[in-house]
Image (cartoon, rainbow, N blue to C red):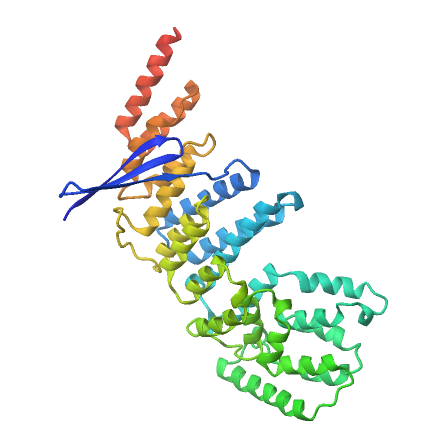
Length: 426
């Protein structure tokens, strides 16, 4: 059975989509966009995102990894530009960056030896900067151990792999010499260049076995010292005890893997994720489902959940779908409305932009990349772009010429001529 997909604009932010078949049955729905595109940070993301998007199309996805890094960099730059007065925008962009970074690591990044932990650890350090901030506060005390969060700070630093910083604090404790002797000998994957992965695994296993042997006979002055050695031994119970310091299941998972499976690969990551999600089962939200879907390598599920979670702003869904497509992680299977998931998200994002004073030409560029339905959307959308003055009309006409929309361009010319005639400007 052959189906036909069509669209008709109702208002500037409402589009009716209809799907008709040979049996003359018609299914239709109305899509509405309410994205706030007028904030400075959203404008920055739209313009910079369009620049990277255009480069990807020109290169036909030949350097997906560097383009993904560019997207992530622009999101991080946006986060750093936002102040306390922009808390809502900052949270939203931070969520974008978190989802993007997880997908980048799991779907796009070239992982040496397949080891994912160093990338996840960097991600945790970026999104959870509190341990280093607390460290500065602790060190501001004349007697750092008198700080009420001294031990929380030590454990948080260990959870994030800040080994040297944790060592500096442990050295001033009563059990410092014994604890630091274990920690100083800990093999770290980042520092093991020039050696094979097998050599690292052997070295790390021997180190942890030594920690476990000493745990049975250790006699510490401070109770917290036993917890520190338990962490080095990878005891799950002590990680659960301090789960609040990790804040989320994926942070706790990353911390736990540092002391149990430092060479973990993306293939087995979802098993660890399930275990830690169970620990945080009372605190899970839709974002957690997105991240877990990424760990299961389910790009389609990641995107459909992003669409549902960020339904009033299609920036993330559209650009993530596009880069996953170019990374060959998302196929172009046609959905019920006559296009692939990539094109579906691009159409929606372009529809957010097309009637905006600053973004209409960018919206046209996104429509053009939608090979199945983009032209029909343009043919219905462009005539509805407000032509407030001759300069705007000329720009719209020029864009039509650029994209081969000859008929629409001719219509724009007629509108310009009619307006000029009415104003006695011919």
